[in-house]
Image (tube, rainbow, N blue to C red):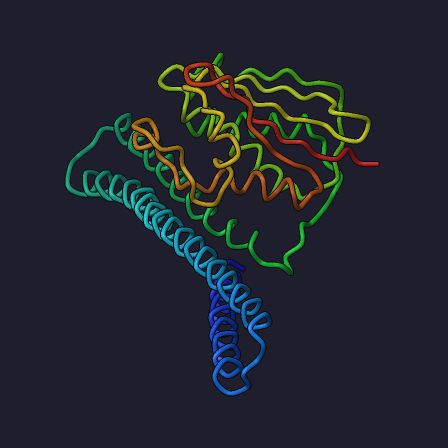
Length: 297
């Protein structure tokens, strides 16, 4: 788990500091009490300096990592707070309107539809956080079954179209041959949905998302999700799959999200013996996200 990993890191650096102190004491005793030869003392002195320099460098790296991690945690908390508070406030407002005003049937049905959308958004945020926690449990294993990949993608596309209220031409699926994979339906469905939702969020008001499947080799199949969004700088292509990480900039601040979607995608891929990566030619040229999974034998 994340907490256990951080405890191990802290314990390592405490042990490193204790080791450096032990080296210094050993050299001091040797210099003052044992009167070792100058050559041996010189060698041990150089060794001590190297240990101290290495310790300072490692501790600096550790502190920088902790500062970045804390900043990401703060951004995550702010994002989750917003993602939870906004739909709750919206649902509450419509309920108060229905309670205090006489509303005709058509308007009431419109309010119900909006509240259902907000509740779906709320449930999706909660599920993202819970799924991330489950990914961190070392003993949690996927519940594998044989899955029709094309059928699963079509379900995810339909769900995303309903969630984001997209027009019929916003999502385009080009299925390859009927591929069967062996994996956890809930986890793989979540990974594909996250890729589609991510593409929709970063595509602006008129999203045009294309999804297709193709063989990577005789053992693996790829799901490729292509958008026409702002693109990704090459330096960010690997970092965007980190936990809580969001690409810096004005666009990221306007796009709703928790920074967990792509982390879940890569975690699901690893748990199923596959991998995930992103491709982009740079800013303004769109992005392609690829989920590679083994084909069932």
